[in-house]
Image 1 (tube, helix red, strand yellow):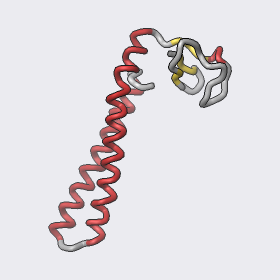
Image 2 (cartoon, helix red, strand yellow):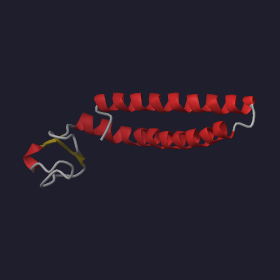
Image 3 (tube, one colour):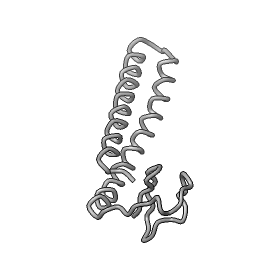
Image 4 (cartoon, helix red, strand yellow):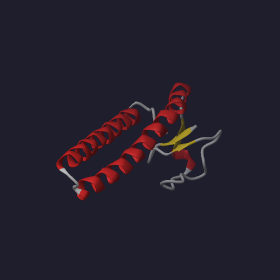
Length: 109
């Protein structure tokens, strides 16, 4: 596993690519990732994917409850839809913060 020192792209393989697929720099700008970091990256991929999938579902929920708010059948319905919208938004923001923490701790790639 190799990381581009310019853009951070991670290449899975026994050798670095000839050029970085993201930024186009030559292979000499790639550095092999040490084993502990590699293990951490591989271990974190499942959780990171789960976070991204949950975010996608929450985004869909926010779209649905926005329709309920706009429909405005009655005050109780709007209250419920508004609460769900707020909770989904806070959850998305929390996931973003957690993913940023993962990136900062080499739990990404």
